[in-house]
Length: 461
Image 1 (cartoon, rainbow, N blue to C red):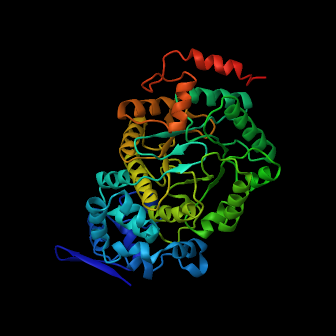
Image 2: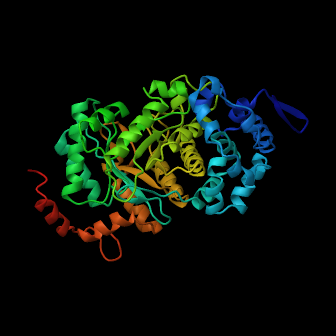
Image 3: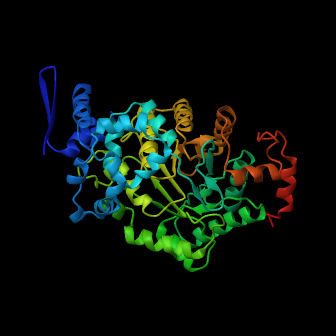
C-alpha cells in the first residue's frame, strides 16, 4: 500500500509503510548511509504530514518485517493487547500525539502500554519536537526493584561503570569506590569486561559482590559479559545479580549477537532461580542503540530509529531492571554529531517509556564524532527533565577500556544538586549512614567516616 501527500501542488508518494517511516525520520547519518533518508527537508515534511494522517490501526495490518521469517515481529504481534489499545484505536498518529500531550496522565499511559506496538511509538516520535518528547516521557513512571528502587519520580539513579583495560581487580575496585564517593552506583555497579572468558567473568562478579557485601551497599552488581557466559557462571554458583545482554530489533540482528528469545528466557529463569533480589525480582539488564541492526545488515530496509523501538519489544518481554540506549557509542556513521545524538537519546527514552521500560541512557559519543561534552551536558539536562531512570558514569567522563566519552561521576552530582533529584531511596539512606552525605542529602567535603568504614571492611585483604 502506498501513501502520499501534496505540498503546494507537488505530490509526494511513498511506496510502503517502512518507506514512509524512514522518510519521516529526523535527519541522521545512519539512514543516509542505508539510502533510506528523505532527500531533503521538504520530502521529510511531506512524509511527516502523511504519517500524521495515518490511522494507528495501520500498524496492526502492515508488518515492516514479516512474522513468518522474524521472531521479533511474532513477539510484537503476540504482545499486542486489543483491550489496552481500545482508548486510542480510533486515532491517527497525529491525533495520538495530541492525546499523549494533552489528555494522557501516567495512569492512562500505563494502561495503554501493551496496546501500543513499537512501530506506533516510533511513528509518533517522528512528528514530535524535543519538548514534546520530554513532556510525555516525564509523565510516565516505570519503577523496578532488585535491591534498590529505580525510577521513582524526582529521583535520578546512576550506573557506576568501573571498567579497566586489563580487568585488573584492584583497578576495578578503586574505580568503583571513586564512583561511590560521588554517589554513583544505585542503579548498578557494572563492569564491561575486556575479555569474555568464564574465569574472568566469575572473578569480576565475585569481586563486585564482595565490595557490595562488605560495604553493605543496597545495590546490584553486574559483569556485562555475554548471556551464555552468565548462564555458565550461574551453573557454577557464582554471585550473579543481573544478567546482561545487548539486543536488537530483528531476529537476524539478534543472531549476530549470538542470541535468540529462547536463550534470553533460559537466562531469565536461571537468574530468577538464584533468588538474589531482596526487594524485587527485576533482574535483566539490556543495552540497545540506534544503528545496531543496520551495522549488522539486519534492518530489512527499516529506518534505524524504528528498528531501535522494535528492540524494546524484546526487552519488555523479560521485565528488566534496567534498559539503556548507548546512544552515541556506535559512531558518527549512524549519529553524526551532537545534534543527532541529542535527538536520538530523547527519542529512545520516549519510546522506551511508552512501551513500559525502565529507560536509562548512556550519554556518550565516540572520539571521531562531531560532538563534545557540552552536547552531553545538554542531553543530560534534557533527560533529567524527561524523567530518565538512570545514566552511566565513569571517572573523568573517559572510559579507558571502551575508548569513548560518557558522563563523569561529577555530572550526576551536578544533576542531583542543581535539579533537585535524589538517588534511589535505599541508596540515599546508605549514603547518609556511612557519612557520605549530610542531613540535606548533599555530598560532604571530607568523607572521613566512610573512609574509616572502608578501612574496616578489610576489602584489600
